[in-house]
Image (tube, rainbow, N blue to C red; front, side):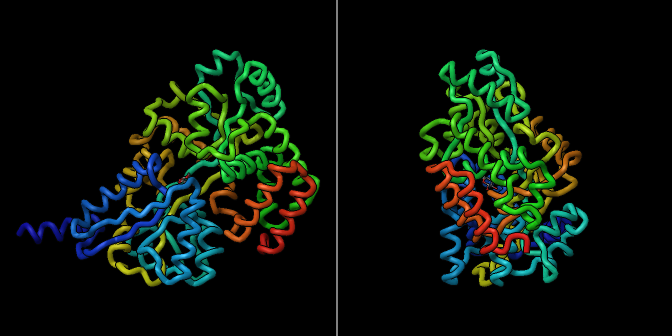
Amino acid sequence: MVAALVSFTMLFSGFPEGASGELEIFSWWAGDEGPALDALIKVYVAHNPSVKVNNATVTGGAGVNAKAVLKTRMLGGKPPDTFQVHAGQELIGTWVVANRMEDLTFLFKDQGWMDVFPKDLIKLIGTDKGIWSVPVNIHRSNVMWYIPANLKKWGVSVPKTWDEFFAVADKLKAKGVTPLALGENWTTIHLWESVALGVLGPDKWDALWTGKLAFNSADAINVWKVFGRILDYVNTDYASLSWQQASDLVINGKAAFNIMGDWAAGYFMTTKKLRPNVDFGWITPPGNQGVFMFLADSFGLPKGAKNRTAAIEWLKVCGSKEGQDAFNPLKGSVAARKDSDLRKYSVYSQSAAKDLQSNRVVGSLMHGVVANEGFMNDFQKVMEGFLTNKDADRAARSASDLARKNKIGR
Ligand code: GAL
């Protein structure tokens, strides 16, 4: 009787029994980035008590280290059972073209997800041959964070344009405050995408990725020029700081602003126990008004996964309302599903959810939406070069060569 009742519940909650053994979940959500994933795993374990979860993380923001480890494992025929991957070109242009992923269309149909996820998002994780991952969230890349009490103390207000930023930045510099906190290489690319979006506007940003605007056009050269000016206002030790350490400069009152994705909101709220709109504030970066630059974390099923059954159960939890509403309020992101319960989310996330509905939405470069990993890896070298020589023309020319080599827009 009890057993029958349990199976009945499992059936109707969409989580049938049957998975056992070990499940390796591979991601870069380690340390400070861990609490949201832990909450998701807790939901999984509640539905799959016979599975032993191996939460395999490789530290390093934006997956800079994890992606390299994953590549070695995938190419060596030792894939994890499931792994974190960004929706968009990071998934499609890397692992799907290499024929390493299983088609998950059956799961989307069985779980009724075709109507639950936004159509554009399904397009981004799909090709004409299948649907290749399960999105757990939508993060916003273009957010500028600050501590309202500190701005007040320094007598500055939030800049809306890059020109306003330069004026505010000079004032801050004169007071011995770092205007903009920055971290290691990938965070410079993260900053670059917000600068590019602000300088170019959304149409031209999109045009870079469809091949309609050349990377060596006057517009694109101008992006590097503005970016170079901004670098005059960042902390000098940026190359050695993680994104959390760069955020700490803002929290500790050493720096005024930081442009970072809204996992920073998760860090402020979950790790640092700061209250949104009270202890910390946010605004879209200069020139980014009305545009939401998005990215989505997802999990996929690699071909050859050792515990395919347990991995499929994991993917069900990732796509479920229960899983997404446990994970995202801690992560700083909003659910990828359209039916999440926003009352469970912070005022920051509620505002992001509202902007996502009303803003123009464009894709992130650093976090895998618009370009494949080939371009991204090479672009990191272009950035390294620029950070040393600040030569805008040269950076634009190199980026244009990479775009051709990696078939961007073709
Ligand atoms: C992004 C990822 C986020 C967050 C961030 C910092 O690429 O999508 O979920 O983890 O990196 O590590």
